[in-house]
Image 1 (cartoon, rainbow, N blue to C red):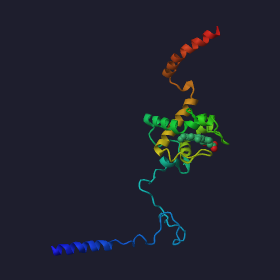
Image 2 (cartoon, helix red, strand yellow; image 1 turned 90 degrees about the vertical axis):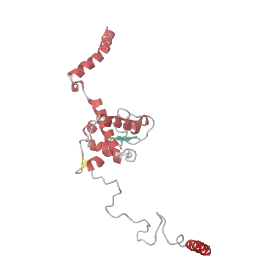
Image 3 (tube, rainbow, N blue to C red; image 1 turned 60 degrees about the vertical axis):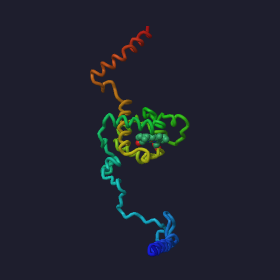
Image 4 (spheres, rainbow, N blue to C red; image 1 turned 180 degrees about the horizontal axis):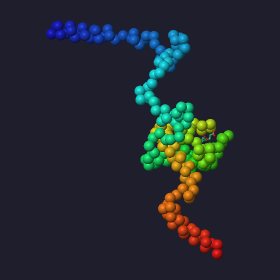
Length: 205
Ligand code: HEC
């Protein structure tokens, strides 16, 4: 019994000795604080050159920048599927329509109602932008363009390509001619146009 008590007291004593505040009052630097110790005056040490955070090794330059050998790529580097298009429309409607409008003609609500800028919101249906390689559009979303700010923090690379694919579809939708249609499609179109034609003729008489 006595032995047990001695052991117990001994361990309590040891435990108390362990409780001192030395570690709390030691010299240290709080994160982001100023330092007199390091020559650059910052307590934070720079990363070793070439350090890459886990999951951030972006080897696929075309996918992540839209640029290869200093040039914008002209082919979307992911498969263009119906899902991609649908996703692109969805993201475009959320992030781009307020300024660019649903057609991409630069007539969004913000542009119409008091968005004061030295340069107007871009219209995608110009010769220059129709001929622009897809990499340029990706670049604009990623890095911004002139008065337009970057969307990199809001739209992931995969979704940026989806938006680019949708912009291309918008451009086609505003610049195609009837002659781009197949004969079957033309016939279908004529069917739909028929009532209108009759109406127009009727008005003439
Ligand atoms: C807050 C308004 C605003 C929003 C939202 C916006 N843009 Fe823009 N965008 C602009 C303005 C303003 C310009 C013209 C910038 C300039 O010429 O300095 C522009 C220009 C552009 C251009 C033309 C670049 C060129 O080469 O002329 C593209 C392409 C474009 N935007 C794509 C997008 C896409 C894609 C989105 C959605 C992810 C988007 N923008 C969202 C304001 C906006």
